[in-house]
Length: 525
View (cartoon, one colour):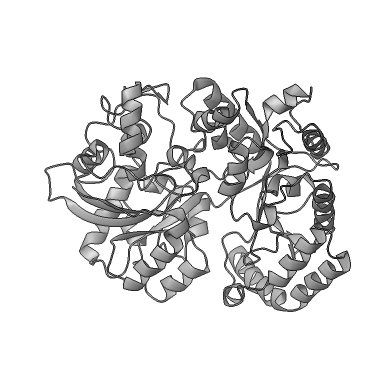
């Protein structure tokens, strides 16, 4: 038994993701299970202990938070025994992952299994065409658990009709910045209801700005973060619920056979004007243009100075609330499931349904591929749902009751050290994957919220496609991003913005649009 970890200082704001979203990526991978223990024979297709020689698997995955302990890890010992594997996992902190992954891919023979955290992006598709990874299609035919993944997800990961990476299932609804989180205690303090509309949210933020509940002028009504203009023009991320409330599509829409990008709609101007007005009134974090990711925006919220940010139901968990209460003992968090705009628009993004792809480098011998796929299938089995949540019964918990872990303080400490969920490389599908709380009342709220938002899904018709033109022109949105940011900050005019939109539409954007529409039309035949 062995595994490795590489340490790079991790932002404090990412630590909250360790238990809720471990295993690992920027999202969660648990499944509902009404009881059961982690011990026993594998329910997946991995060989039972003793039947064959243990398969040696060396994998690299992304890490949010602290790594598992390296010595005498009971969780790893148990999983290796039940799965009949010798598992060697390198955990790389999220902020260093892109560089480490590039090195690993270039080396070719360093790992048996790599988590391609960007999914089926241009980089992955190009690597597939270069022959970097094995075609896994024939090896997946007899899997019991991986084959439960929805066809919509498989559609999003195939390259030329074949599967080169096993998707780690996530919810089609509820990931990323699905909903708005707000300080419920601040609302109560000023006799405000949890906002249901954009106007009510804007008013609440104005009250937060005026009353300064954080004290000392530190209150940040709305915490969002900047974008770099590579994949989208911005100027900010952490705003999807607001965009949907204003009737903006999820990146693209096809209107009577004509593709339309979000910023090409008149509603996008309304959205930028809302941002501009909010910025001028001090409702948006002054650091927003230099913040780089959702974790940093969330960090402002958990530090007790921000009133609102865009997250998802996993942010309601007791770990977040405990952290927030260390700053303010009276803190409470509420979720705004969907935000309604002036014209009645509302929605939540229909996501790809996965986070990251498990790819097997082409240097791995063909006779080892099935063993690796079978192990992934095993970790996605029903018995490992219990293991993910509660680890080894008697060591990390007392098992599950109604799907919720029961733990003593000592067991909780051991689970925090061993981190059983970090070794479940492939999770089981679950529509409530982001409902992560160990508290029954919070779990019920999380599930109810996911049920609610699933009724308001907004699809991106081009979500499964990549544009080669966009890949070759990574700065195609840079100028647009810059002028949009200046406009919101009150340093530019709308004419400047419209000029860049028109330039993109007639230039690089025309070919990007054609690339995507050609794939869309081909699928419709």
